[in-house]
Amino acid sequence: MKKIIENVYSVGAIHWDRRLFDELIPLPDGTSYNAYLIMGSEKTALIDTVDPATKEQLINHLKEFKGLKIDYIISNHAEQDHSGTIPDILEANPEARVVTNKKCMELLIKLLHIPSERFITIEDGEILSLGDRTLKFIFTPWVHWPETMCTYLAEDKILFSCDFFGAHTASPETFVKDLSKAEESAKRYYAEIMMPFRNFISSNLKKLEEYDIKIIAPSHGQVYSDPNFIIALYRDWVSDAVKNEVVIPYVSMHGSTKVIVEKLTEALMERGIDVYPFNLSHADIGEIAIKTVDSATIVIATPTVLAGPHPLTAYITIFLNATKPKTKFMGIINSYGWGSITVNWLTQHLSNFKGEFIEPLEIKGLPTEEDLDKVNKLAEKIHTMHKSLGIT
Ligand code: FEO
Image (tube, rainbow, N blue to C red; front, side):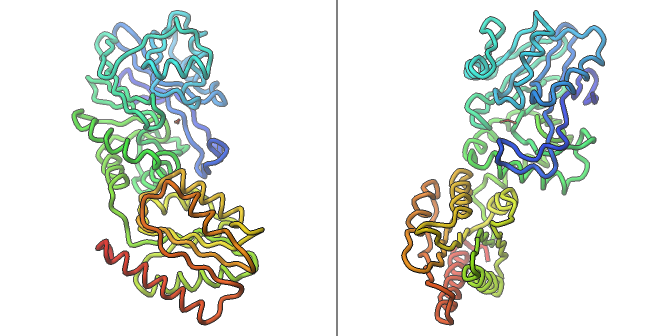
C-alpha cells in the first residue's frame, strides 16, 4: 500500500515477471494493475481492482486498513486485468456496490457473472459523494474499450484514468521520477495498446481539457505528479505529424532479402533518413510498434514461401494492420524464386492503411547490380516523398 495524498492510497498489484499481455504483447518490464482506495468522511470507494493472478496483493494491501468497509467499487473498465478481482471484493464486502456505466455493467455481468443487483449505474458527468470528497465520472469511450471511463476526484484534482496514459512498468516507485524511462514505457504502451484508437484518444484529450488535473493516476505503471508531461506526449503521438524515419520489418531465408534491405538502409541513410530495420526472426514486435508511432514510411521486405509471404512477415503485416500507425507511405519488397502472390497478399492484409502505397519492388533470386539500382531508386523515391511532407 502506498499513500498518494491524505486518505487516497494505491493498493493494487505489481506483476514483476509478466512478459506477455493478451498472449501477444511483450512486456519487458512487467506491469502493474493499480487500484486506488479513497476514504471519504462518509463512504469509501475502491477504484478498479487487479488481475486475478495477483489478487492476493490487493487483498493483503486492503487488510492493512483495520475494519475497512468498502462501499463502492468504481469500475472504470471491464477488461479483466482491472475487473477480475471485483467478485472477491464483493464477497468480502457484502454491502458494496459496483459503480459503473451501463455498457461496463453489461460486460461485467457477461465476463464475471456479477449479479445485476450489485450494480449502481451512472451517466457521463454524474457525481458520487463520499462525504468530504466527490467523484465525477468522465466517459472516455474506446480508450481502450467502448465502455471505458475515467474517474475524477474533484477536491484533489486527481484523474484516475485507467488504461488511458498507462504504461506497462513494474516499479517500486509509485510516482514517475525518471522521465526518460517513463516516456519509453508509456510510448511502448501507446504503440501496443492505444495506437488503434488514435482518433478516439484525440477527442478524449480534448474532453479532458475542461478539467484542472494535478495528478494522473493510471491503472498501469506509475502515477504522474506532472500531468502535462504525459498529456503533451499523447498530443504528439495522436497528432498527424510524422518523422523522417523508415521502419523496415524483414526476414531473409537465404540472404537475398537481407542484401536488398542492407542496400535500402544504406541508401536511405545517405539521404539523411533515420532507418530502423528489424529482422523478424528475432525482433521484439513491441520495438517495431514503438518505431511505427512516428515513422513516415514502413517498408515490409519478405521472401516468398510456398507462393505467399514468409509467415513471419504475414504475422507482422496483420499486426501493423491492427495497430493502425499514422504512417504516410507503405512499401513492399518481395524476393522470390519462381511464382509469387506475396505483394497481393500483403496489400490485401493492409486494408486499414490509409496512406499511399509505394510501387512494390519484386526481385527474382540474388539481386544483381541492376536490381540494387532499383533499390537505390526506391530510396530516392522515399526521400522525395518525405520532402513533400516537409520533414527532411
Ligand atoms: Fe489494462 Fe484494457 O486493460
